[in-house]
Length: 222
Length: 315
Image 1 (cartoon, rainbow over the protein chains, first blue to last red):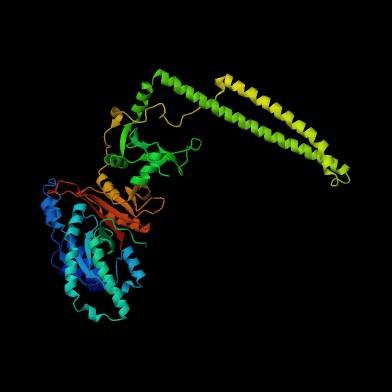
Image 2 (tube, rainbow over the protein chains, first blue to last red):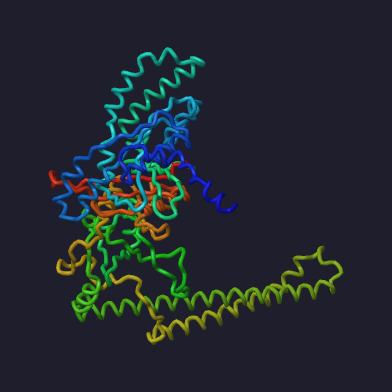
């Protein structure tokens, strides 16, 4: 009886995540982690239109040989960081001054259009340095580029705006102000989410997310 | 009231540490240059005191360096200053200074004795008044009608008391005068004076050979200078396990905004440190700020400092 049972037991179906990782082409740890984080964003945090960007960091590779023939250079190349971008179901980060601005005009965070956010994937014990971090931030699109894209997109947007006219006007004013604030970095500069997973011992599939911003941006009043 | 100390402010270098001993300089540096330092002076009676400390002010090497670079302060080898200053004192000056101290002591002694006298007189007067009152109350029961004729009763009563006062005053006067003469006669009775500053005998401005070069600073100095230039007040960060705490204004008025950690441009960072710092910072309503001087092959000019602030995303 026991023996028949043993033979009849089939190994459990691999999890959706495992199959997803197995089915995607490259299998180095970082790309696997990136897929894991993407999966987590999509299914746990309900982000939409998530996609992976393979960022090119010429700065990093070009400068590593003269920085002192350290043995980490081949590792650096294999660990080219990956960026994920997607649209969160609600705002992830609001600068304290921006929050004040919204409050003063009676706007709520839900009224504001959701924006695409960048997520940087990382694994525990992955070597990092300020140079890498700076390179990742430099590879993010510039404010001018973003605004150019927005202008092309916003053509028909204004008409579709429902709700009261007052609110629409307030929102328009807010968007206008936000454009300027972005250029002056009044509400913070470039920002991304740093997502980290532990793929070694004790990695329980947890993904932690931290907001990383360029420059000294005052903290939120949590 | 704003007191402007003479620039450059001497920063005393003693045993590897930097101190400021003048309260005017301390307030000036804090007000004009956002340099707070740490007050470390305790009361002699309470050596274990660790709050509400006073002068001297200890400066971080970074703070001292920044002030020197701004031309506000100079580093002075305090041991040299003391030794050379004392040696350079002429015999005449020395004697004069000692005489001055002695006369100060005598003055203090005189003040003390006169205060004692005054107190004595006060208590004597009080005693006298009590006596008079007692005498009055003794008289009162004898008198069936004290109010109809107060003038008549007052006259004889006052006279003896007046005499008494006069007598006392005379005697006390004679005593004080005798004591005064005694103190002026023997100056050994003078109080010992501990001078609070070394600058009346020593020259106020240090000589050129007593000056030291700019202080050695840790590699975090570019980040320190960068944040200071942005208007932050920086203080040591031991309390939060970081290098500096960055306050957006005077620490007496504001909570700090950042836990600051500096790193070399190519220094390997443990991501766990970033996570731990970010989580601790968010837990205490601060941001975790990591930064360092950028190294670029092309531009060897003014070093550019890049900073990143990190907060928990809450998801």
